[in-house]
Length: 408
Ligand code: ATP
Ligand code: MG
Image (tube, rainbow, N blue to C red; front, side):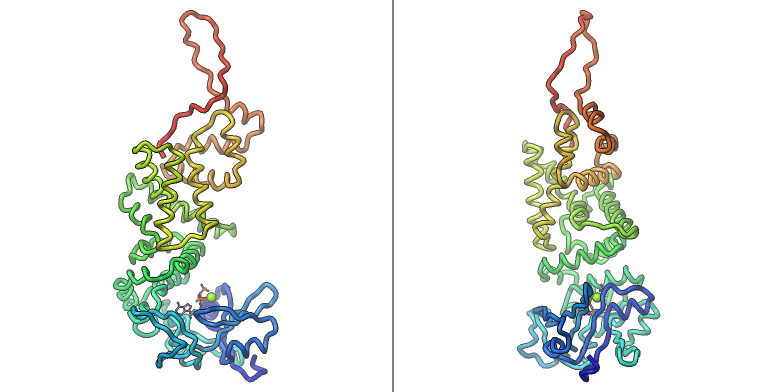
């Protein structure tokens, strides 16, 4: 880029993370070249984005995001659109590096690393805040949160991830502006929720989001269910799920969004199932109906892509099926494509007081048993011989599931 006479800087998360001695997740580059000029320099480049036009330069499997300096937008024009609450809907105003700084969120995210001479350019005191571990918004916090309320979620995400504290002014503004998240498209909140909960610090993030009243904006029915906690076990299940997820990430294992989200919404589903069954609905219908209701309410705040909500439904509707241990049902359940997730969920419930631990142990044993043992495990129990006449009566009942139904 420099050969063609353009300036280029590394900026944002990668500079921040490099200064902390961490490996950056990705690299963002800013330049004074506009996207079309970037495309002319790099053949392996695609232009993307509606809200900001960006160039993605592909190096093998790596993608480097190259953005053009954004302008101050002082004078409003066709390229910058605010809504009535002051939220930025579109801004494609190109500008200089000095102007670009003011469009970033936190001072520690606004450090520019000059690729030409390896110097760090800092216009907003980002280095000082970096040293003291402070997350400070650039400019007036209220205005910045109004421009983009998602910055409140980003504040929590970075505070947890970096171990930084929030600047008191930023904190104050956050208390006043929480409701603004209601205006953010649910699909964007879903993307943000994934970053919040799948980054390895889910538990701490959850606690901090709740502390600032942000969690209720993302998962209102979960928040409501926490308010009516009985014996504290809904909260326990959620916490355990978050903890497990963090531990898995720490061990380099994969985590699935749907499992965690199924845990988030389990308590609302469970409560609704209970209600519906009390009104006489059959158990499996009650699960289906409850899942539908909980999901359609949920996606008004944080969206759930179809494949995710489908998987969540499967995990939920499998739960009552674990109660059937006699006959052919267990082997059918075992061959369910999502058995593993359903079973893990049962274990999670058992560990947190929501299911009988003996039931979870039975399933652990059952799935590891050979065919012969499995057949034995699913045979109906022999009745006690209390026949007064002493006549031996062996009865070979057709294997039938008559295991007791437990409460959801
Ligand atoms: P991560 O480690 O999660 O990638 P990051 O700081 O790189 O953190 P990105 O979402 O990749 O975060 O954004 C890159 C940079 O773009 C940020 O550091 C910030 O300077 C700027 N930025 C991103 N989103 C916003 C926003 N909503 N408002 C203002 N600036 C933003
Ligand atoms: Mg980044």
